[in-house]
Amino acid sequence: MMKQGIYKILYNFELAPKVFRMVLEGDTSALLSPGQFVNIKIDGLYLRRPISVCEYDKNTIVLIYKVVGEGTEKMSLMQAGEELDLLVGLGNGFNAEIDCEKPLVIGGGVGIPPLYGLCKELISFGKKPTVILGFNTKEEIFYEEVF
Image 1: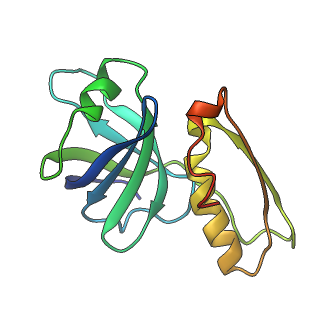
Image 2: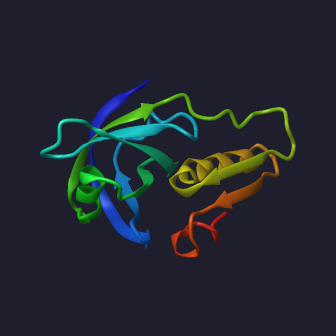
Image 3: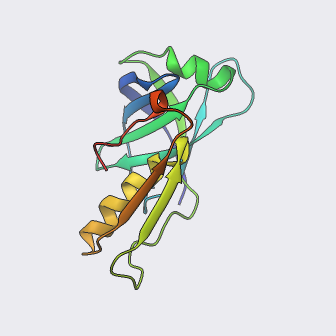
């Protein structure tokens, strides 16, 4: 179930070189499982930017993205209080109710953020995930402590 809405930026800050964490406030009812993504409309650009959801709750969505082009560069300059037009609840997401007691979760770079939400949900189902994170350089490491 996809929804379009306006979301308010609560935070947007750099975690590692060119890697940012943005927290948005708005309707999260279309997010049904970890691993889904949003499409963000950026003023002045034709195509929306797809960004994986790191985690979400009743009122907020956490996105972690890397600046790789004009769209994400514009996102990195956005401040708390600004608003964004999002399509929310896209993608199938992960099934955390798998028949496995100790799942192995592996990810690298900006592929890591949706795995954080997955691990939280796996733990809520009584699973004990083992996580392997990969990065290009030591300077690019982020979220190591929260996992």
